[in-house]
Image 1 (spheres, rainbow, N blue to C red):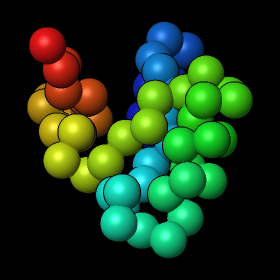
Image 2: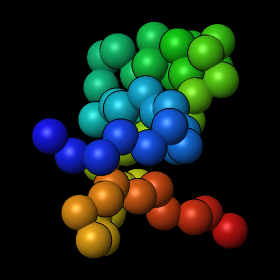
Image 3: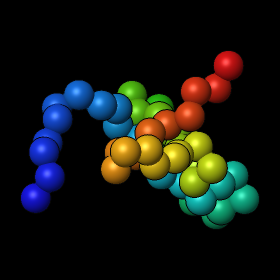
Image 4: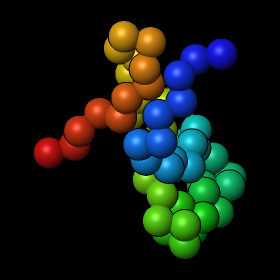
Length: 55
């Protein structure tokens, strides 16, 4: 088992805006204070999953 670090962010993972449940994903993310995340928003570096910065 890997090391658990309590720092990080919560995400709601969605396949994209053309998915039938996208509204529910967006609503859940908003209500829980999470980030709505799509596959292209993530990358792996040094065995960690990271969220790309959007500027």
